[in-house]
Structures are given as structure tokens and as C-alpha cells.
Length: 61
Image (cartoon, rainbow, N blue to C red; front, side):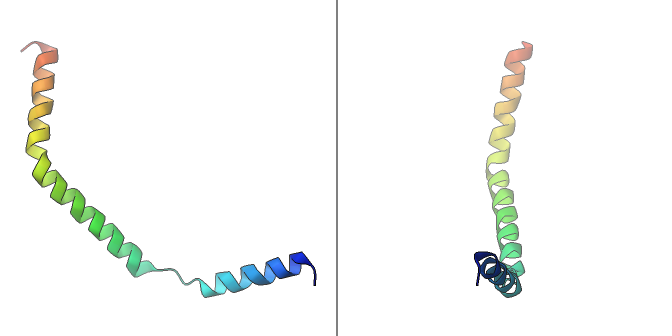
């Protein structure tokens, strides 16, 4: 048996066994979105204030 046949058999087996992990990726996506919302709600006002101060300094107001 040559290496091409072995490689083809390996790939065929791996593709047929790999069903994916959709629920895991959905969970990771939802957790990431939740963390972004949490961090934004905590840091949003402070970041807005810093941004407004920086714009005021640049514009000379």
C-alpha cells in the first residue's frame, strides 16, 4: 500500500468522524457576547468621559 492510499484513507476517516461541535461554538459565542456586554456596561461611562475630555483638550474648549 502506498502513502497516497494511506493518506486518502486517513482523511476519509477523519472527515466522516468529524461532526463538529455546534453547541460548543454557540456557547462560546454567547459567553463572549455576555462578557462584552458586562465589560461595556461597567467601563462604558468611564470610557465616554475619557473620550469627551480628550476631545475637549484637542478642540480647546
